[in-house]
Length: 166
Image: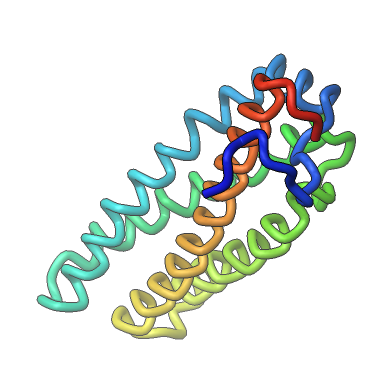
């Protein structure tokens, strides 16, 4: 791994003004609270979904857990869009988070597909759980994207703290 003072060709994730807005925003705190709560809901739900698929038991509890996880997703998407507006001046697709936002729509689409199939009753319980797993797989990828950006922001901060220009 290169030393933080090594020259980087990657543009800093935040301009100094964006970083200041990020650090001053209460929405940053909201995102910092919601993200681990959503992950906890995901982990519990994943266990319940897998339990149902393996044993055939616990369908109602697994379904409720998916609904809770989906609720967290919707809340974090709305508050994340507000955070993006505060920090970058636009609700979605700011250049720094463009691909994360694009993939978030795939995550949301699969969660909405689950809700639609549940409401319409056009999938059997096993099919619903498999659809939930597909939604969860996209969520894991998307969460990884955001964790990578968090790491980039921390590396940028370390470079700035060392006086290395972006």
